[in-house]
Amino acid sequence: MLSPRSILRVVSKLLIPPILLFALYVQFHGDFGPGGGFQAGVIFASAFILYALVFGIENSRKVAPAWLTRLFLSGGVLLYAGVGVADIMLGGDFLDYSVLAKDPVAGQHLGVLLIEFGVGVTVAGAMISIFLIFDGRDREEEN
Amino acid sequence: MEYFTGLFNYWVVIVLMMMGFYVVIAQHNLVKKIVGLNIFQVSVFLFYISMGKVKGGTAPILGEGIEIYSNPLPHVLILTAIVVGVATTALGLALTVRIHNAFGTIEEDEINALEDDESAPAILVEPEIDEEAIR
Amino acid sequence: MVITAYTLVRIRSLFAVAMLSGIYSLLGASLYLIMDAVDVAFTEAAVGAGISTVLMLGTLSLTTRMEKVPKKTSPLPLLIVSATGAMLIYATLDMPPYGDPSAPIHHNVSIRYIEKSGDEVGLPNMVTSVLASYRGYDTLGEVSVIFTAAIGVMALIGRSARRGRKKKQSNGSSGDKA
Image (tube, rainbow over all chains, first blue to last red; front, top):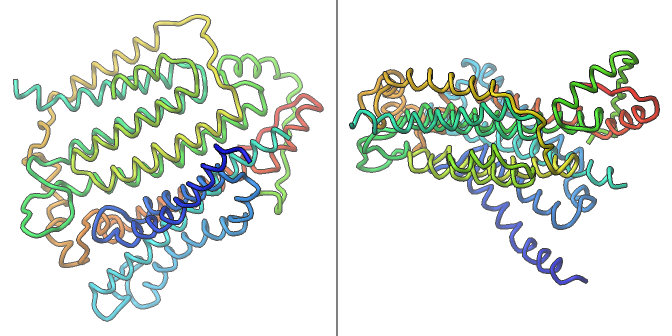
């Protein structure tokens, strides 16, 4: 085993879980401080990109297979639009979160939380799939 | 002179914007053009954010005892713009890769020359999209 | 930032260009932080210095590494750029100075957002409440744009594109799917 590669593997194994945790922290603390859906999605994707850079593209395809990234990508948009449609079904306007709960302010909280989660999921799926397409094509060129 | 120091940030932004603009229209390499577009975008965001700052204000997060906040509206617009910008950059880079496949080069003048040469046997091949092969 | 941008214009190695664009984005992010835009700085640092640089390096690994030396340089772009810059500088002479609280931008909708968002939406972060609640439509459009971009990249350089290239090598035509 080459020792520089071992250092990279150990350090990235130590770093990837905190990165994922930080992404979730940024996602759900977007209400109280800087953060929110976009930043969290990009940080989440960067953990997967780090994994793909250190451990190779085949392993990263096992961790994030194509159907999973596509699910993330479309699931976030569906969640967002679904919240809007649920608002209509519950009696309000499209994307008017006040009708989601008994108390309008709590409804706004819930609505914002859900749509930020949808945004984060879509951004993460998009960044991961774009990077894996760029990187996977590189390996095919070499073959 | 305070008149000019108040306007200094706009002038710096204009200088950066013009540099990005120059890269887009004058350089021939496609990747460098996309980087120039990126420079242009960041300078435009700087322009908006500098317009939103209020002297003596803080970040627009509600807190105890803070009276003046900076304007949150430009921040929202620029947040959207940044993410749309990265989506555009990703798509532009994917197009560059495709152009490199089709023409073998990413210099704009060589591509123009090749397009003029290839006007005779113009066969456009549509690659079929394989459902299970697209990742 | 001006020095970084100027170096970007002149330098020819594309790898250095990608790295310099990452540095440029990072400097931009720190400037946003100084101007009290914490959310924007966070996003710019994550996106500009992270994802953009990685994608450019990926593109460079698939294409060439150095830029070709230009054969002749015409002065026309420089003239266009200088003329546009002069017009823009003339246009900024009317703008309000930096940080002025009486600028017109601060007086229309933003006052309502700052005063009412605590009561109506109840989130401390005003940028999130404006982004998600008051301007939720725009955010829906933005998420659709990201979705479309990812699908576009899939369609452009998914695995099927490789077959297009092999066809090009066999009969010398150019595959085209935009």
